[in-house]
Length: 598
Image (cartoon, rainbow, N blue to C red):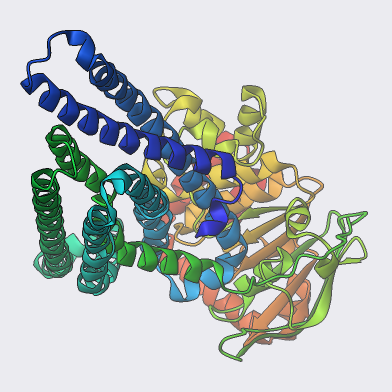
């Protein structure tokens, strides 16, 4: 955790210095106040006899306020900078881990680490870094101030400070460490469950599980409340013990001071000053019990944060990355095995996707189709075989460079809760409105967006709820077209669409791809006659390959899949539905779709 402070040595030193000056000014204020009260009680002949403590009170009173403001400003500014650096650092670390991250992590848990756990760590920097250093410095200052009044006086104050600054924090840490860690874990569990509940609210309501879910949330809340209640009790105990040791120290100073005054070893005018000073120096140790008590929470929050980043990345970034000279994609004997399971997902996959070529990979769910896309995007590295882009091994290319060659339309394309324009500009951040409209027009969405209340400035809603499934997929296609990447990859882009919408989407897609290379991953067999090659995947291996016509003639696996697909279409699409869809296709000039429907 101290690694994040290293870039800010001056700000850290300044924060410690200002904190020391703040407490030092308070010590000076209390000491001069006690001296002023004592001298004023003697009714001096002239005010000039007490002008030094008067000036001291004014100076320390004003400087304390100035130092306190400066200390709060610098320390909080430094802390917020550190939290910002930590969030950016954490995001950069977990981004390459995305394929591995979701195997044993929940999105709510990761979000809790990015937000709540890092917020918890501000206590580490505000209360656990500077205060112990300041307490030691103030203890040294106290020793200097009490030195003229004997070593016994110094010993009483140092013992009191040690008991309050070391003993009490040590006790509260022992009592609160386990509950502090438990509170962080319980808070993470509660927030993770809340994210799941909110995202799955519709399913919870539809199955009538509101009471069961609320009971789980209540149980999580109760666990968190139990830990927080114990932490509050320990904090109260620490505060009480601090007051006890502070009072005992003052009584010790008073007793010794009275003895020294009676013995003529000290002027009685200094007695009030010593009591006030003994009271003031304890300000330095007051934050320590709470700081050490919260150390358990900070340690657990830090452990959770580093547990995310300590995993080895799924891909290795080459030390001297190369840049592909062209967009020709070649896959040679590609095999992949999940590192944690040892299960082979793909075996000996080979195909060529030259510029402008269209290749479809079909097969049932679990055949390894989506894994193939992750390998091509360098989210994973192949276990065996090689993937070449423009003749260059992908393993020798930086992952960001690889992804610049691809535009992807996923089966569940994510739309952010922003405007239509903002969602489209993910594909091209600097795209003009004319470019947005052109891409949306190619995806058959311009007229739909134009009819919205605010056009391209209309908010799409959480997960794009303003639009239907087919419209969301067409927006994702428009976003991919804006990217202007030479290779368009489609991962089950028609999942969840009805047959008519599916036909329309595929017609739109193929018309909009133009000169781009297309790799289609699907288990639906629509429009595949327009592809140059079709690969049939089963259990991670290519069992058939060829054109649509060749595969139909071979009467193998592909022919069986195609016949099932035709039966599905004939069952789902009634003559009335086909007639309406044909009318829409005729109005839009979609000739091939019209012929297909007829």
